[in-house]
Length: 409
Image (cartoon, rainbow, N blue to C red; front, side, top):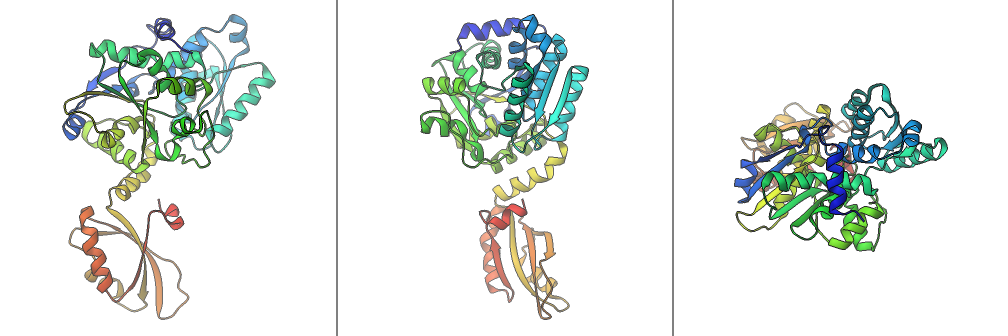
């Protein structure tokens, strides 16, 4: 088990190499939730996430022979950047395995941070497949495997985040919300805090592996995994991280991916903060928490490594989650003016067509089309559905839980 002393020792090891990250009060979240909300800005350090802490702590305690053999790791992106940063700082070579889902931005950052010390290998569709490949490489070469979360040295390094929070705030916050993937940050937080503060672990709804482990009585693989929140999409938590969670039993909340996207856009548009999906997990979780008015809450903004090419999907998911984006199959008569009549009969003054594609044209009289509609406001839906019922067109709504919907978003 990791102790508070282990966390303090880790902080001493990288003092002067990894400076404390900013603790910043957020007015938007404070007003919205009637709380005193602070963000721990791990997105602002050199690695743009907290992962450099655990990696540096682990590698810095290796003996000379292990350093000369080198290290290997698997990562969805942020842990790889942490390992690359640590290896470049300590002069250790590393082989880094990334799953194919890792955004190009993160791949580029790994190479830039590691330079000549790092070799990048892209293998596997998920983190778990990349992890298996990294483990096999370590066994074959004698290189030291650097776990992303499941090792006491990694956990102790991640725990320095909360040690800084308390020092910067000058006291314990009433509630601390941390994102949870494999559980390294959560475990480090629990190791340092014990039971002195209410700790909330925020998991992606499609990858709630810690809640699954606690319900199962031990680490167990998820049957289904949504990889969208790539920095926290882990199929099975570790034995060390599970042990600390099982001892302290923090509150865990599952945050819908759409809600995470809404928060990412709010962070960007209102606060000027570029966050990756996992980075927005903690602050997105505030929407579902029932906390006392005025309570001091710290949310760990764990990372800012977001590929700009993902924003189109993020906007789409956010609109669907908020009830502003809807899809329909509409059967149009193949005659002039059919689309214009549909627009006049169905759309409100603030609604807009965002997608129009004919599905097929093998009938001379009718042709089905896939139509995407963005509403001016979510509450406009009921009125639009009534107008659709009265319209002469045959219209079928595509619900978000339909298999067809996965091809749209």
